[in-house]
Length: 225
Figure 1 (spheres, one colour):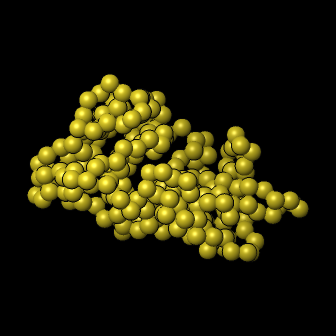
Figure 2 (figure 1 turned 90 degrees about the horizontal axis):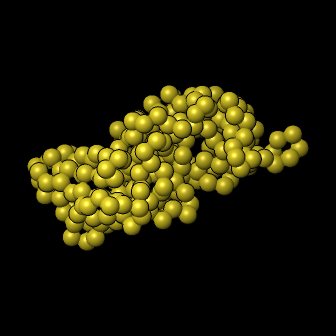
Figure 3 (figure 1 turned 120 degrees about the horizontal axis):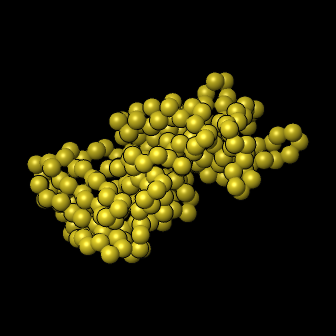
């Protein structure tokens, strides 16, 4: 076991590292609040894997650039990537051209989000977020009827990953907005990095509570790579 989406298996007399297709788990070395959740994702995959035999199903590309096997891992018709998404420990990630079973994984992720399982925190009524990747701005709006204290919350660009953490005392009053800029863009807060948002590739955003759970997300409509 390596992490929440990577395992080592014995195959044809040797050991091989397998990267599970269709998902992305939090990194164990995450510096944007999800290190503890990454450990729980790893534990969830460990529980599924056990010590028994599994079936490996290949997609269109047999290996990634690092030489890892790219496979779906299955036991008794249970697809591990779908189950991990249903439990809420991973994000659905469409690695084109390996789109096999992606729809089932995405459906399982929606179920986990709706139920606030694993990585997903209960939604905050009225809270919304929009990313303008060209303008390099993120607007978080509170359209609800009560203030929302976002002290210690982090806005994260998943592709980077880059993040900015809101200081103590940051409160979004009812009907107000908060803008986060990057590069030359101005805002109430700013990323330290320049050119945070990728304009050509999918670059989704998450707003994470201090415990790392995702309270708000923006799914980039750009075509995934």
